[in-house]
Length: 124
Image 1 (cartoon, rainbow, N blue to C red):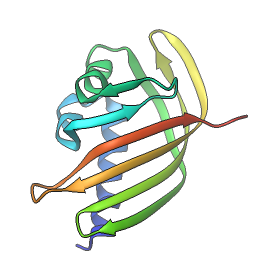
Image 2 (cartoon, rainbow, N blue to C red; image 1 turned 180 degrees about the horizontal axis):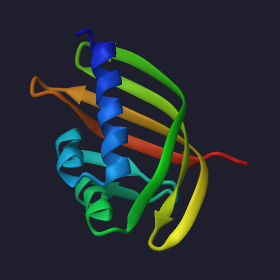
Image 3 (cartoon, rainbow, N blue to C red; image 1 turned 60 degrees about the vertical axis):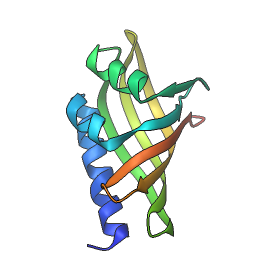
């Protein structure tokens, strides 16, 4: 399978895991070194991200891709730009809207994992 198809499959797995709060799958898809910038601008890491799903702080009810662009930087690095329409709750506060995701996927020979991500709310 070519790298672009591999990334499409990884994105599909990630979407499914986020919707189901599948902590085991998220743990395998996110690098231990990952850094995430959330929609509030705060930095977090894999432990924080997975814990939010495990502890029920984040519940994603719907997540519909509006557009996805994949850029292969090298054989082992890809950047994904995605626009998602979402609904859910975070710390018991409802949210809905469109969010722009940027994810850096890296393959160090053990499979693709997210090394960096940034999430921004889109204006209405």
